[in-house]
Image (cartoon, rainbow, N blue to C red; front, top):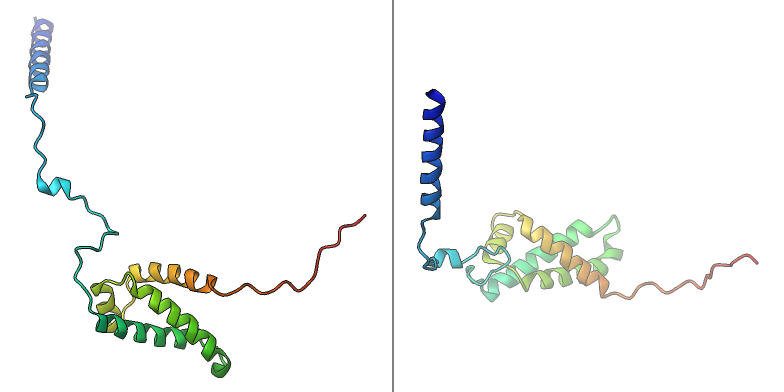
Length: 144
């Protein structure tokens, strides 16, 4: 008798489960406006706009910090090279600079992680512009 009641309860719950899950309207779901707007971390079109003066202030501050960081023990010999490279990097960073990044760097004297990634890309771009050193004329000799 217990087995019969258990099987009957199991069969009843199975039938109810099939009907509940199977019942749906054939209308397409309405997508809300929020569902359409997918978060894209690389889309800065809705970010706060940054003025040209703020960008120039960032460029100057970044280039100065970069020159200080990159200058070795002989500052006179390195000054021209580092100034040119650091200015190139700062100018390249300004192209995709957000207001939050500029504020953190200039006002709060912090380096946001996003700015670090952009710096690496800018440094690669700026250092690739320089011509590679000329070959010293050495050619490998192959044994005969």
